[in-house]
Image 1 (spheres, rainbow, N blue to C red):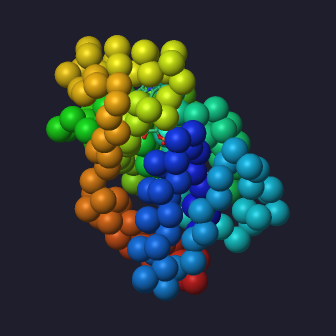
Image 2 (image 1 turned 90 degrees about the vertical axis):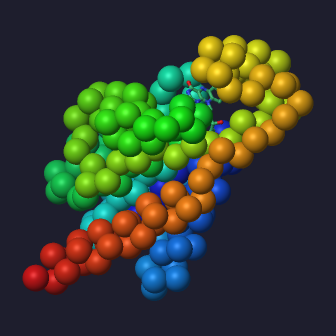
Length: 184
Ligand SMILES: Cc1cc2nc3c(=O)[nH]c(=O)nc-3n(C[C@H](O)[C@H](O)[C@H](O)COP(=O)(O)O)c2cc1C
């Protein structure tokens, strides 16, 4: 399995690490790779049977390295099942954590013509003190429009770790199915 993530402020990395830890409990080794450090080399991908992408959203799009990876993935000659986990603040709202309900998932899937075996959005983290002044201003504006917290001193983790556990469990099942198909 290949587990990759794209992050700026660390939450997508924490989510990828949490998934990796849950998978390790089920005997599946999937060390998370930061797409900003390096895109996986084609030679690393030959034995891969399942790809998991955990990507944060900024200003309406997944981070550029995630978009680049998804474009590369689309061009692979051998289709490998894809799990796509989007990390954003819209997913904190009821119904916005699914493929149908999350605009960022839908848009990236349409842009790259992807058909993941599992697509889910996970609520991220709001950390105003960490942001530069312009990002803080913009995120406060987005929060004001969408009924979220606007106090510039606060940091709120919206991530449901139970939801991440459920995703990890489904990934472990998919990994088992992919492995069985490989052996068949
Ligand atoms: C500058 C900036 C822009 C963001 N834009 C969006 C956005 O357009 N939609 C959204 O739902 N969340 C948006 N977010 C929230 C992030 O997706 C959320 O904070 C997430 O946890 C970031 O992941 P990371 O910590 O892995 O970078 C934005 C956050 C920042 C700092």
